[in-house]
Length: 309
Image 1: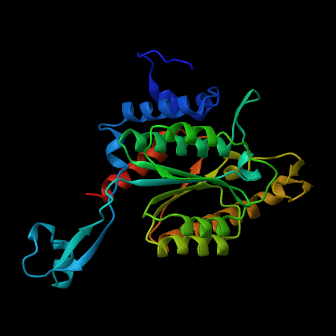
Image 2: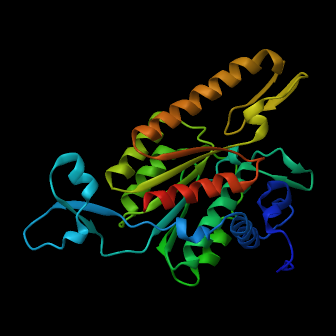
Image 3: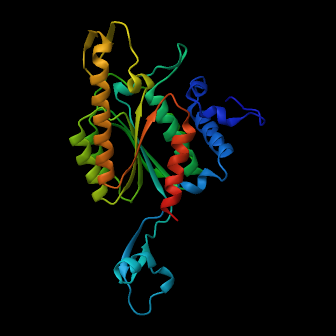
C-alpha cells in the first residue's frame, strides 16, 4: 500500500483530480478523512453518530432529567425522551452502480473521475469514520437489482468488505431505485441512518414510494444527488454525438439548440427531488463530482452534529 508523509497537506486529497490518481479506495477514504480533519476545528467523528428516540407521556415517579422541555413549551404536556437500547449508529450506504454512474469528465485520460468514483469515495469515507467510533456499517450496491448487500456490522473485517465491494464497476444496466429501496426497507431490522448516493436518473414516482417505505420503518436518510460538471453546465458548442446510457441510444445534434431546454428540465427534476425529500424530512444535497469533497462532507457532518444537540 502507498504511504503518505506526515508533512503532506491532506486537504489536497479532497480534490477529485488528485484522488483520481489513487487506485486504492481504502487509501482514498483515509486521506479524505485526514483532509477533513485538518480543515475542521474539531474531529468529524463527533458529527456522524446519532441515537434515535421516541416520546412517551410522563408518569409520576419518572426521572425529570429525561423530560423534553421543548415539547412541554409547545404543548403544555410533559413527555419523556425514550432512547433505544441499541445506542450505536447503524450507517447504511446505498450506492447506485447503474451505467449512468460510470460517466465522468473530471481528470485526465489516464485517471478519469466518474460519478461512481465520487459516490464510492463518500461512502468509504463515511464508513471509515463510523467504524473508527465502533458504529455499525452496512452497504447496498444496486442497478436494476440489488447487486450486493451486507447488513450493518462493527466487526473488524467490515471495513475490508465495504472497500472491496465498492470497487464493483458499473455495467450496462438500467436503474430501478424504487424497487431496491422497497427491498432494503424489508431487510433492515434496526433503525438506521441511510445515505443514498445516486444521480437519480430514474422514475421519481418509484423513488418516492421507496423513500416513503423507509420513512415508514423509521429510518433516517441523507440523499446525495451526484452529477458530473458537464451534466450540470452542458457547455457543448459544436455538433456532438451523444451516446445514451441505460439503453437510451445515440443522438447526433446541435447542442446549443438543446442547452436551454436541457438545463430547464434538469433544474425541474432536481427541484422535484429536493421538494420530495423535504416533504419527508430527508436531508438533500446535490453534488458536483468535479468539486472538492470538503464542502459536501463537512456539511453532512455539521447536519448530523446539529441533529443530536
